Image (cartoon, rainbow, N blue to C red; front, top):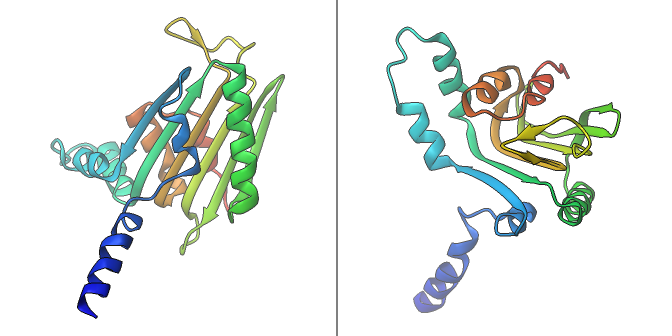
Length: 182
């Protein structure tokens, strides 16, 4: 009986603590830039530096403590952008995310989705999907991006999201999500 329990525990171990995301497939794709920040790196960032006199840094550390991970995927390839869009739609159908807000300006669409947390103005997941950027004047190091996908998980305080976007150079559109009151 102990052997069976041990075998089951070993077999199930990979399923605990290593959360795979439907979006992970983009990490190794050609024509996709990615930034993946895991809990260990976030924890490391919260321990660096002297926070005595820096209120913004203190706010960032307080908010970042609750974040489990951040994933950012960007592409300038139309086929990959279409795949990202289809994957986001599929994920939204199978998850309990709700639309927080959307912004449309010419061909650019910015959509925010959240999974509510235990506290008011806290979420356990924030998903931002931006499409239609190719024809805009968004140029980063000579690249014109078509689509941006940002996924954050943890205990996220929407009111403190701007501190994170400034410290980690995440898209400024995330600041708009923090201004939303549920």
